[in-house]
Length: 240
Image (cartoon, rainbow, N blue to C red; front, top):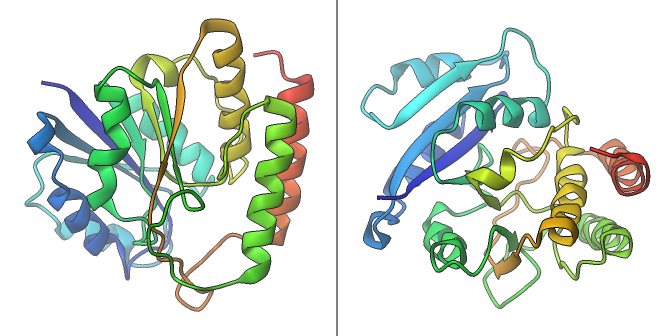
C-alpha cells in the first residue's frame, strides 16, 4: 500500500497546529488505498507550539522533530524530507490556508502514473478563495511569470505551498535555501529534472483560505526580493 508522507514545517503556530493536524488526520486518502505518515518539524518555536505538540498523543502516524534553533521553512523541509519514508511526499503549511481534504485530487495524478511532481494552484480552476491582499496576488503572479520565463514551464502558481513529489524525485535535490526561497529553488530544480530526465509535472486547482498578518501570516516583501534572487540564481548559475 502506498504511503503519503506529509511534511509540516512549524514555527510559532500554537494557535493553529492542533487544528491542522486534526484536519490532516481526517483527510480521506485511505479511500484511494494510501496510508499517512505525518512528519512535523518544529523549527524552534518560541511560543507554546512545543507544548501543544507534546500533548497530542493520539496520532500514531505522527513524528515530531525539533530544531535546536530557528532556521526557516526551507531548513525545516530539508529535515522533514530526510526523515520521510513514504512513496509520495507532500508539503503542508502549519496553518489552515490550505485544505487537507484536497489531498486526494492532488496525489491522484501520481497514483495514476501521469505525474512525478504536482503543484496545487490557487489560480487555476474554480475553487473558493478568501479575498485578501491585492498586492500579494500581483507579487505571486509576477514571481510565477518570472520563474516561468527561465524554467520554460507554464505554471500558474510557483509560490504555492502544495507541492507533491514522488520520493525518488525529492531525493534528487540538494535543497540549499533555508527560508521561503525554497519555492523558486525547488521549482527551478524540478524544471531541470523535467528537461534532463523527463520528470512529469502537473498542476491541480485548489482552494485557498489565506491569513492576514494579524492572524499570523509571516511572509513579507523581503521574501519577494529573495525570491527574485533565487529565480536568477537557481536557473542561471546553480549547477546541482
